Length: 114
Image 1: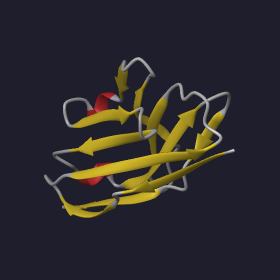
Image 2 (image 1 turned 135 degrees about the vertical axis):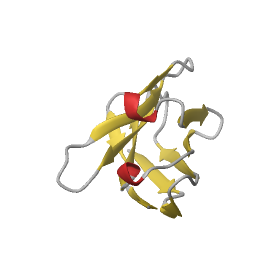
Image 3 (image 1 turned 90 degrees about the vertical axis):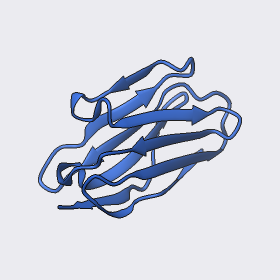
Image 4 (image 1 turned 180 degrees about the vertical axis):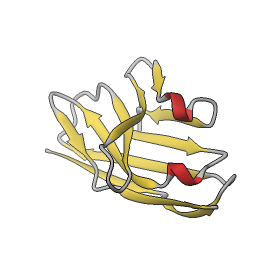
């Protein structure tokens, strides 16, 4: 079993920055992809950014150039640096980690005020 602990969400004004962290612990043998998803009220959960074990990254078009995903394999941790935040970035952000199956974090609220 793998546990994920997210941190770093909060309230920020438009144009501001936040950094999300997600630390994995438990029965970890090999982590493959790590990523961040978000879900706004009334909308489906969507991919924000993902990073493979080799460091290849993938971003949603809406966050390209503003968000950066990174990972520390020694700490089993994935980060999401979010800059130039917009009100439309407001959502609950979920961490997802894939080993032999996918695990989800509990979610952290990000609210961007205009």
